[in-house]
Length: 240
Length: 240
DNA sequence: CGCTGGATTGACTCGGATCAAGTCGAGTGG
DNA sequence: CCACTCGACTTGATCCGAGTCAATCCAGCG
Image 1: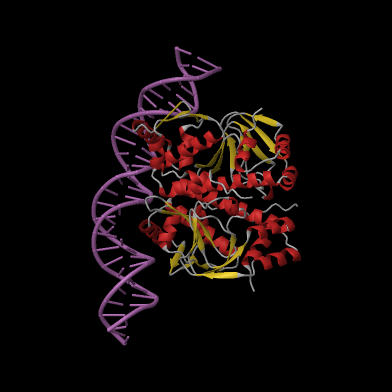
Image 2 (image 1 turned 60 degrees about the horizontal axis):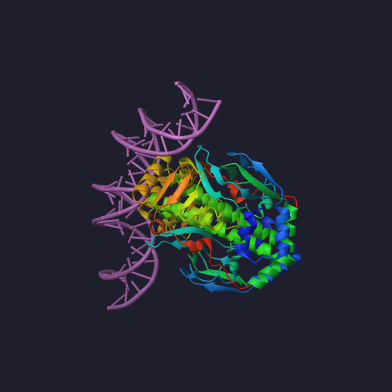
């Protein structure tokens, strides 16, 4: 059975059989969760590390005035922070978008894995660095890109990440995110997002319809996004 | 002699004498760097982990069109990513604001410390989680707060972080950041930042003059920022 | 004493928010 | 099978926060 988490970690470091066995064991039990369910809420005490096996989720914060900001999208193979258990409480919530299957790894077990399997530890740390790079890209987008550039950039990010885990065909990808969720990801209103999407459609860059994203012109999209894919770190340091 | 890095780590976990000795040794040699000097540039291959002993610096990205986005401010006691060496190249640069003193810890040495000193490792991981929380707060600010709220929020962050390392008196703090640097931190223009600062001054919330920040009304400031200081994690998990 | 880089202010423009109607599609129940 | 409903998407009209452009102002300094 496919385990996208292990597949993803393999992209970051060489895993030997023992590593894979250990990871397979740790993520064997997956529980199912329904759509729009909070896996954890802001203020909660962190539980075990968890890993998305199937389905999408997102990290978010709610401001006192009720506004929501999405902080990251989690797709199959993504995990929360490795050391999440060190903090007393969550500074943000994580909610599923779709039905999902989630594996949880208890804190002690995670520490054991990091200790026993240096290859896995390396892959997990790289994965975390990549996630941080994505956050920096989001800050940059929010601060210094126009709304059309922001949309193009997010779509590029989602497309490339999905492609890395085999969720795309040539130009096409299932994106189960509503426009209001996308708007809350990009720091704009749903109304304005809708207009930007229309413009991108008319410019023959991308089309989103019923949860299905089509990249009409990848080059144009990447250009208008000012997208630098190196931040998703295809170029990893080779040496040990 | 004061070592703000060790002081800061002590806030996150209990360090025994061996831990302190190890850290003292590792950060003993500090080199001096002049103001406005790039410690590392986007695209560079990461070198050793480094730690700010004195002075301020900032992480930043430059977009193709020349716009700059500041991603984080580093003050004494702050460090770059622990595992920075795992990546092939930097996705952002780090530049000093003022003259600074920097300690560098080679990769092998850092691995040794993480292995030999679990207390230090824990403190460093918590410190990194706090930095990530700060990034999430920035994304939230950029996406969903008005410009005045953003300014108030950043000033609250800087004040509290500075207070944690003993750089403030009651209401007062040296902030060596120019208005254009602040504007690039907050995703706005220097002109508009200037107007917002004026408004905050007239509202008797804060005053900035010649690099000196005065918090006139801390309560008002925190209120208008919607500032939740728990994200700087004063409440850490107690248990081992 | 004039030069220079930051800070400040004013006049004007524009991107994106807000407010207000619809429209469309997938269920749901009669 | 069709009317009803509800949530998500679209579109238009208007408003306002923030950007842009362009002058100063001011302190520090060679």
